[in-house]
Image 1 (cartoon, helix red, strand yellow):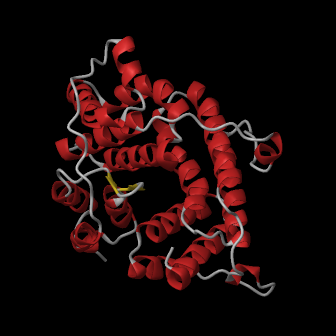
Image 2 (tube, one colour):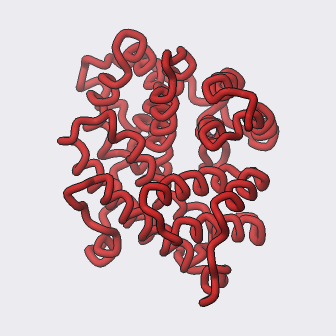
Length: 319
């Protein structure tokens, strides 16, 4: 049992990550704040600080662009022009930080949700996912800290700065991803189980991109309690198309993985958590937590098989 509390670990990690860039090059995303929140969630708060310091030594994070000028949240013409402009990422963060300092964070989220959701595909949905982890952190806090609110500003700001609409996908690709049911929570379960199963069966190579066809829909679940029900179906439809687009874009077949064996049985949740944390990679930790969280809601062996497949692929191929 960790002697460090969830909130203490998260806030300490965010303090250690002050000024750390959003990306490392070329084209990779800073997962550190998301992993810190994930480790704290799964009872590993006592190793968060060590993990963060090791990650900062391992990754050559890039300084964010200096920005241009302030973005006015109440001027649609101004903020619309800045969508998808990574040069303005710090301007976006500062705008959201100002909004979050004067209004409840849930109000800000609901106001900006329909503006940002169509562009959630940017950098393989990482702005969207980072904001979801920030929301879970705020949800867990009795009194959200300025660091936690700033992290939501960074998630939303990165999402806005990397705003990218979901690519068009072929009808046959979309049909492989479960359509919305009346219950959007149940829809997310169907989607994540389906993509986890495809991941385990295909053992993709490279192993990382298609992980997000599981983690992005699972991240949507973290937002739902704070969004009006009228926004749920539209958000699911966008996430569904994003998952289909990923499977169209990236190779879905690699060397045979353990799950291809007809006698294969996925490891236990405890084994997966221990080995994912011990291995230490950002994606093994995040996928394992997302899969096991989904598995609690609707048990399905495909979740544990997907987490096991990524761990196997990372250990054998390193990517």
